[in-house]
Image 1 (tube, rainbow, N blue to C red):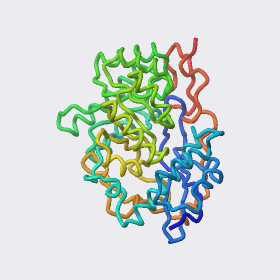
Image 2: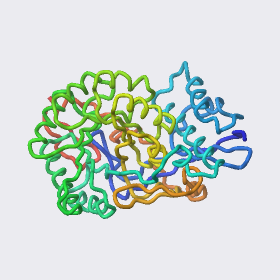
Image 3: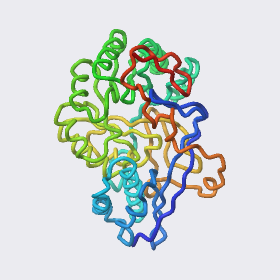
Image 4: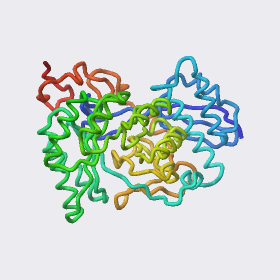
Length: 394
C-alpha cells in the first residue's frame, strides 16, 4: 500500500449560539473546520481534522510511502520542517496528516483504531465544556442541563474577566450537575485561556475557593511560563491544567521539570502520535492527561490505550457540517463504535455545497486573537456578552 495523494476541504461547526472565551467570541457561532483526506493506491482514504499550512511541503515527506509506518512517517514530517520550524499551525498540519495515516492503518487492519492501539474499553470518560463566556444565565443553565441529561457530572466554564461573575456562573452549573447527580458533588473547572498575570491568577482563584471546590484552573498564565504556572500551583488548592497550545515534547519538558502542571493537556488537532508521546512523558512524572478539542475523536481512540488518561473534553454534541462520527455520548462518557479506523465519514457533497463560509478565525475579537490588554486589566470587564469585550485598564 502506498500514499497516492491528498484532498482538502473546509467545513463549519455550527454551534447555533455565540462561542468563545476571555480573548473573544465567534458571535455567529460558525467556526471553520479544515479537513485533510489522504488517499492510497488501494482505495483506502484516511481523514484528519487540522490546518493546511505548508501542506505541499509536509506531504512530500510521506508521498509514496506505506502509510502503515505511521510513527516513522511522523518523524519524517517533523524533519521536513526542520528549518522553518514545526510549531503552531505547521504542527497542526503534521497532526492532521498523522491522524489520517492512523485512520488508514486501522482501516487496512479491519479494526477500530482504539482496538488497534491496544485499548481494552471503548468507553472514554467526558466532562462538559460549552465555550460559554457570552451566554446569559438562562442560556448557561439550559446548556448544562442538556449535558447533564447525557450523564456528565463534571464541567468547565470559560471565565477570567470578573471574579464575581465567575463565582456566580460556576455556582449555577454546580447546582445543575448536583441536582442531576442526586446530590453528589460535581467536578468544576475554570478555563481563562492565558488571561492573567501570576498574581491575578492566585488572587482570582483563591477568592473563588472561599466558596467553591475547583478541580482545576486551566491556562491561568502564559503557556510557556513554567515558573509562573508553578507559582500559581503553589498558591491555590486547585490543580493547574495546561498544554493544549504546546507543540512538541521540547515545549512540555520545562513545565514538567519545574513541577508547573498537574493535568497535562493536548489538543486534538496536534494528532495521535503527539498525544501518545506526551502521555508517556507525563506518565513518567506520574501525571494524568486530558485531551482538548471540538471534535476529539482521534484522541479518544488513543486515550483508551494510555494508563494515565483522566477525562476528555466534550464541547458540542453535534459534529461539524458533513462529518459523521461512529460515536455516542452515554452515562457521562464517549462510547466509541466498531467501524474500522477512526469511524469518521465525510460527506464531501454536503461540505462543498455549503455556501455561507465563516471567516478564518484570525480577525480581531475572536478567541484566536489575544486582546491588546490581556494580563493588564485592573478592573473587571464591563460587558461579558458582547463579541468585543470592552476592557477597563490601568
